[in-house]
Length: 126
Image 1 (cartoon, rainbow, N blue to C red):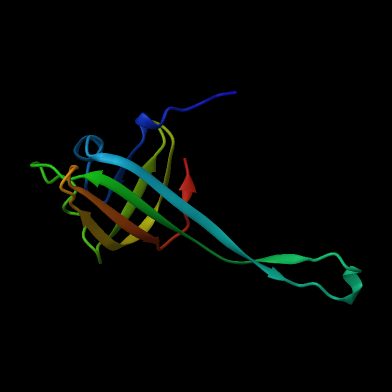
Image 2 (image 1 turned 120 degrees about the vertical axis):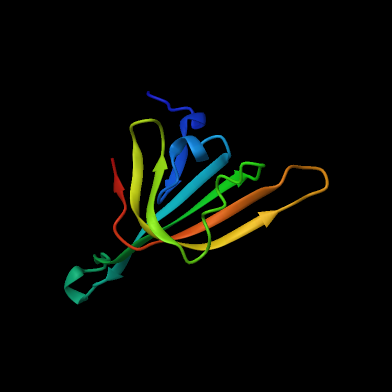
């Protein structure tokens, strides 16, 4: 069974380059969903049936804040192409809007920031 180490992941959003963001990013996640609309009728004899409904996706990215400020250009309201890299050649990509930025500072830790994104197009795995 093949396995991929998580440390090969990274992301880009719009004009940001991989080299700008990969050192500051701790994690990313995506949720890709599709509604299942029930169409069960009497003729289905007790077996539920469904058709595809609306689909969409969201993503979030967590990173470190440092003196380079390399992820500061990701501000709520910005729209661009988002790429979520699994490794150097495989990634999910789609147009998105940044819907939130959540900085976090703790006395016993480093400053982090989380971003949330809403997909504006289909997301494609390359």
